[in-house]
Structure formats: C-alpha cells, structure tokens
Image (cartoon, rainbow, N blue to C red; front, side, top):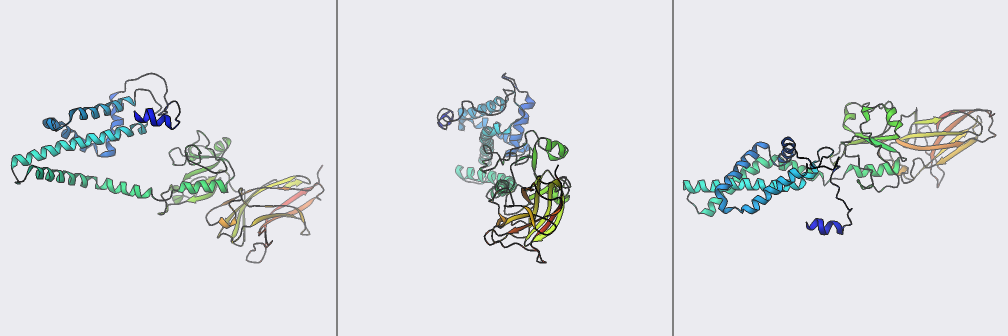
Length: 423
C-alpha cells in the first residue's frame, strides 16, 4: 500500500498500472486447471513437486504444534497466496504471464519454510520420546535442525551450482551492448527482424532496451522468424537486416539463406561474454564478387546499378570489404572513372562506411563483412561515349598516400562502365 500510495505517484508514474493486456472488461472465475498450471510452474522454481508433497505433510503436522505457531500470521500468508493465485486470472488476458506471479513466489517460500518447520517440531518431539541421545531440549532442536538443513542443502546443491553459474554469467559483459554500438556506427538505418523468443527484440528499442545510438533500427513489427517466410516477404515489409542465433551457422554456413543474404557480423560463443551468441545478416546478397587486396583491406564484392549509362546519368554502387587488420590512421576511399587513356573522367571520394565514427582504424574483425555506403558517381553531360573503367582504393587524407597491393598496384578494378551518347 505504501508503494501504491506514495512511491508510485512520486515517481510520476502513469495514471494506470499496466500489468498485462486485457481482452475484455469482465470478471471470470478461473478453472482449477488454469490455477494448477500457474501454481505448478511456480512450485517447480523452488523444488520438485514430489518434495512439495512432503512439505505439505509438514504443514499439516503444524496443527499438532498449533500452540507454537502464530495462526493469524500463517492464515494471512495462505490467504494472500490464494488471492494472488486467483486474482491474476480474474480478467481474461492475452496469454499466460508468469511475471504476475513474482510476488506470489515470496509467499510460497514462506509456506515452504512453514512446512519444514512442521518436520522440525516432529523430529524434536521424536528425539524427546526416544530419550536418545540424552541432551537438553535446545540441543535436540539444534540436532534436528542441522540434519534437516543438511538434507535440504544436499538436495539444493545442483540448483545452487546452477544459480551460482547464472550469477557469475551476469557479471560478464553483455554482447547486446556490442551489438548496439556496431549497428549504430556501421550500418545505415533500416528495419530488422529477429525471433520473438530471442533476447534481441528489444535491444535497439530506446524505451525498452535503453538504446542510445544516433541512428534508428526499428523492429519490423509482426515479422519474427527469418526461416518461416521467403526473403521477398521480409523485404516487402521493409526489413533490411536480421539478427539471428549463431549456433546454426556452426553446423551449416548456409543455414540462413547465405546465397541470398550477406553475413555481416558474428558474435560466436566466448567465455569472456555472457552472450547472446548471434549473427547479423543483411537481407540482400552481394551482387558481384570481387577479389582484390590493398594493404590489410580486401575487396569482397560490389553492387552497381546501372553499368550501361548515358552521359549526364549517375552510377550508384556499393562496395564490400574485409580487413585482416586495422590501419594505423583513418583512410578514405577514392572511386575514379578512367577513360582509355587513364585520365579521370569522374570521381567520388569519401568515408567508406555509413558513419564516420567507424573508420578504418576500427576494422579489427577479419570475419566481418564491412558494408560500404552508397556512392553516387555523377557523369558529366559532355562525357564522350565509350568504355570506361571504375577503380577504387584507399588513401590517407593527410598525406595522400595510398594502400597498395602486394604487386605495388594502388587500386582495385571494380567494373567497366559503358557510356552511350545521350539523346
């Protein structure tokens, strides 16, 4: 009540407390099966159901020792537990929501302790009746309590180890923070899809996931599982990227339509991170492969449309790279259209990726496919007809020095461009 009346309004909470989606405003009486489904899931959180039977017997034994039990307090806990169990089902909701049972879990823990107390009283009385071993009443209580605690601790040891491993896991860095930084600095804005049961359906949401990036990557609503529909369907809904579990790629590199998509970034299992293990795909393939390397940067392919143009048109293209190692200084990209004499007929230079924060000094993952930004090459209106060569390379903007291949060549040939006479 204090939380409802004082703390909640003080924190400028909304007028209504949103707990779960209500389908219609009418009260319903939950069936015994519905109540049992919710209760059984909570009971399993603490102990197996078989042990709860023993705890229930211990609770019944408490009647024999009712003079030592605060009946009002015990009745209040039982009544509160039943009220919580029934109350969460009074309004018809969209599905079953375990989060509504968190408070009830604490009440069940109290009742579990009450059941153990019944066995504690019974064990103490049994020792007193046997008169063996001969000891004071306080020592008998200590002996029974120690034995009961030892049995319980032994049974709880596997659960404790699992809980301890889970707690340790939460001390490790979360890969979703890396994913947020990667998307924001490396990929142009666009919608993404992910499995609804994955941990990434809220990662890039500012309100729910705490995303603070400059660019927006909204979730393509109602589009959850990449493999359930053809890629054309996802693309028609505006989805550009997919964040998928990494594990299937270990067994089959083509699991996620890799002939029709592009694997951009992987986050495989790592003992130094708590996960999630995932991969980022672009829902479009690299149109044309390319093999060329300048310095530590390799060209992987390119997209271009069109390659047959007229004078005065524009050529739009995108480059893809991988990097064996980062460069010492940030490098920019030059793209030159050369005529048959090797002279520059048109050019477009600039940063390689969408965002300047992700320069070539940060290209430290050899398995990453770096998605270049779209370059727009404007052809002069008076450009003579003929075949031209589009080349590309990297240069240091401070010194003008270029990255070179092993044979000393300082550029990669991208494509031939055929220019026709404009009408």
